Length: 119
Image 1 (cartoon, rainbow, N blue to C red):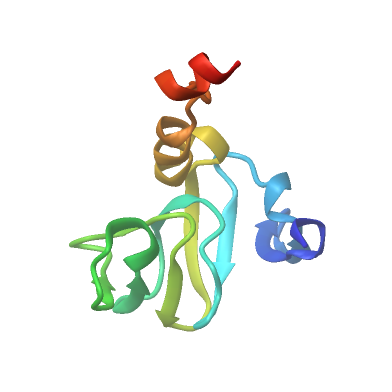
Image 2 (image 1 turned 30 degrees about the horizontal axis):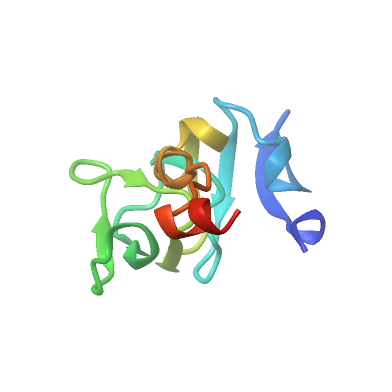
């Protein structure tokens, strides 16, 4: 469940395991290969990490993340290669790319003309 999820964050010089819902913009997250990326963030260490963004973009191939090139890590995606990758959080919840997409998908249920006639 969402309450059991944990992510590593660097706070006050030590790495803590917290629920991703407790992340705030400016936190430094610490990711390992296989970790889900809990928030939109910018890579600040570890040259050459790979991320699978297929859940968000549909791109089937892992994308290389570098400090000098594409350094953006997107929430709801997966880090597939890289150890001790550190990234600064820049977007959480509804302000992340995943949150913006999810908000656009929420629509109010509307009756069809047939349903209106049956009521």
